[in-house]
Every structure is written in C-alpha cells, then in structure tokens.
Image 1 (spheres, rainbow, N blue to C red):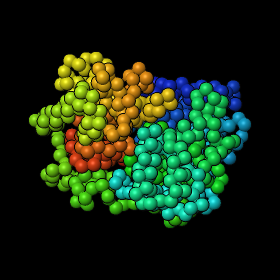
Image 2 (cartoon, rainbow, N blue to C red; image 1 turned 90 degrees about the vertical axis):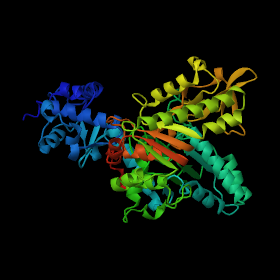
Image 3 (cartoon, helix red, strand yellow; image 1 turned 180 degrees about the horizontal axis):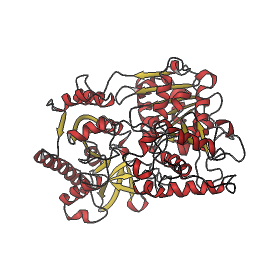
Image 4 (tube, rainbow, N blue to C red; image 1 turned 135 degrees about the horizontal axis):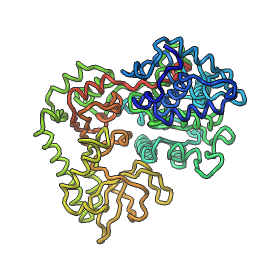
Length: 549
C-alpha cells in the first residue's frame, strides 16, 4: 500500500478526524520551512491532523504505538497503513514539522514534537515537561498530593494539617479549585473544621485573608490583557502555600500556568480524586501524578497520601460498594450489587421496567412541585433546602432521558407557569463567573417570588444571596444536570441516568463520578449493557506525564 494513498476525505467522512484538523494540518505544512522544496504525503497530513484531533479529544499526545485504534473499522476505506514503520518513516522524512525534543528550543520551533512513540503539539509537549520539572524540583519536597474518593476525609486532612501549624509558622495561603463554587465550599468547610478543632488565631487569620477562587482568577486572568494572566514566571504569586481542591478537573495547560506562577519556595497541595472525570480540556494531570507517585522510584512516592477510609457511607453501603466496583472495573461485583435489593439503592432498567421508570419520573416531578410551592410563597430557605434533597444527573444533554428531555418533562408537569422563561421554582445553575454579583460558575439556586417580584436566590439556605433576575449572569435550568457539571457537589438523593444506546461519552469515570454524588440514596437508571459498557470503558488519555514522574 502506498503511503500517499491514504484517503483524507474518507477520514473526515468516518469522523476519524474533523475537516478543521485536516485544513489546520495543511496550513501548518504551508507555513513550514521546507514548503517550497517538496510536496507532503497524504500520510504526513493525516498524522498532523490526528495529533490536532487527539488534543481536542483530551489527549496530551498521539500514541503512535496504538495509532490503529483511531481508524476503528474503517482502515480499508481510509487506506490506513498497516505497517507501523510507514508512520514512523513519515515522521523522519518531515523533520521540519515533526521535530525531536532537542528541537523545541529552536527558532522557529517545529509545530510537532516526536518523543519515543508519542507525537505532541510542541506547545503541549513543553507544558508537560515544565509540569514534571516543577513537581520534581527540590526532590519533590514542595509538593503534597492528597488522593481519595468522596467521603474519605480529604478536606478533613487539609484542616488537620493547617490546624497543627504552630503560631508564627503559618504561611500565607491561597485556595483554588476549578469552579468558584468548589473553592468557596472548600474555604467554608475548612473554616468550620478549624474552629471546631480550636485552631490558633494565626491559622484562622491566614484562612480569613486567603483568596478562595478559581485558578484563572487566582492567576489574574483577563482576556483584554497582554499577557492574559497577570501572574506567571515573570511575576510569581505572593503566597507560600497554594491548596488546589478538585485537582482532577485541572487541565494540563492550567496546571502548567499555576505551577509556573509559584514562588520557588512555595508549597503546593494537590487534593482530589484521580478516579473522577478529568478536565474537559487536554490532559489527565492528577491521575498521571497519582500513577507516577505510586511508583517506588519516583521522588513523589513519599509526597503522596491516599485516603481510603469511608466517612460518608457505612462500609456495607451499596453506594460505596458499587463505587468501588466501578472504580476497579469489577463487573462481577457490580452485577451482584445491582441485583441485591437495598433501601438506599435502586436500579431501574428503563427498557425492561417502564413502570418503575414512570414512578421515578413522578417522584422527581413531586419533588419539583414541592420546591415550586416553597418558592411561590417566598420561603427561600425551604426552597433551597428542598432542592439539595434530590438531583437528576444525566450523562448527556440531548436524546431520550438526557438533560433537556428531563427538564421538558418536569416543566410540562409543573403547569403553564413554566411557559415563561422565569417562573417561581425554576432551579438555575450559574454557568459563568460574574464579579459584579459575586456569583461563580457552578452556583445553584432557585427563582423565588419575594414581595410579588421574582428574584434569584442562591447559596446557603440560612444565608442566601438574593439577586434581581436582570443582574444574573448566564444560567441553565437544572431540574436535571449533566454529570460533568455535578463534580464537586453532593445531594441527599441522586438519580443517575445513562443513555440506552451506545455513546462515546459514557465511561467508567463518568459513571463513578455520578454515583458518588449522593449523601444517602442512589437511583441508577440504565440498562445492564450501558452499565457494563461504562465499567469496561475507562478514559485512556494518551500522555507522557506519568512516565516523566
């Protein structure tokens, strides 16, 4: 098979890559140094397009050793080379585009970098190298990694470490998380635990003055500024200890920016669950750090702590057992839990048990009606408290039993008032940080009727924020919520919904994240096939970070 016979149009048609990847690859070759010397082969363009597509798909690099996984069942139609030496030969023949690690410092820098069997976009390669170097500097002594699932006491551990600091030794602090809601929650819980434990005034004062925000805001991001981030290598953050919560949601690029902004003597505590969903952007940084640190020859091996004792659930809780089975890829254990009746856990197969599905949909509607009743009479505390008692978490937005389908079904059951955009009892999720109101992406609230006017009420039921609708940033209706958006949140009763047909989005991490949101009760609406497919499909993002650590 000729290496130039690859069918790029078929690659787009079969969604191996997108047209934007092909056109971007062609543009890169046009701008390359040797563009006037010779024509590029179709396989060279495809490799560049695959690297670009891999990045947009969440991978830090393209795994050349397993490149056949990208063509799926369409190898013949694409003219896909079956001999791996053809792919590697193409890389060698185009050194101006596919450079080596030693070429990264060159000007102009090659657009792609080949390292062993990994093909990177050059910028992403540099980010991965920079992250590893910063984590390993001073033999990793400035890094602490705290790993554990929901309810294992990660925040408690942080509070204990801060509380044990003697007066006069407490460093300047900064707290951050991927969402403003998560960062504020972290600060609130730490403050409560430190006061309960009788922490020193120095610790409480340091926490009081500590910023608690998103990583973007901590680094002073502003889209109109050049550079867009105030803090970085040129101007380090002024804090001696930075604590990152929900670190599994940090992308490769954001983690790199944060690490480059730290003072040389600053400590970094990374706290999170490596088994949860990773960032929607490229990389699986916390999972990579966890894999690297667990290797006995890594300098980070003595710098990580894994918490396993479950504080939220009883050890015999079916929720805890199912979460462990999903996390470990244990199909037999998962089937056993699914088929064992328990008051705290209900599995509904929507294709085989339509009556049970209808009953659960009715329970969701009754809950929404109860929230609406409190919101209509202006009982804000009751409305917000009720909202936290039940939440539907769907894996997809569209399709049958997706977020939009649930929202429409519930609103139809609530009556004609929901024909208006704003109505008493409408649950809302803030989707954009807003400095003028202090609201953050991830904040959840209820529209309530107060003194005859509809207003948005968010936050602590006992001390809610009350805002005019005209001042609200962008919001979504969340009778149902995507599992992605639920990370860092918890509810008394969670209804997790997987699609009945196959979907690329349904993975082990997605299911694990959904079923670990409840505090007391879990309902899982999914076919056995969907559940088993999710358990058998862990996210395998191609990266080299774990190896570097």
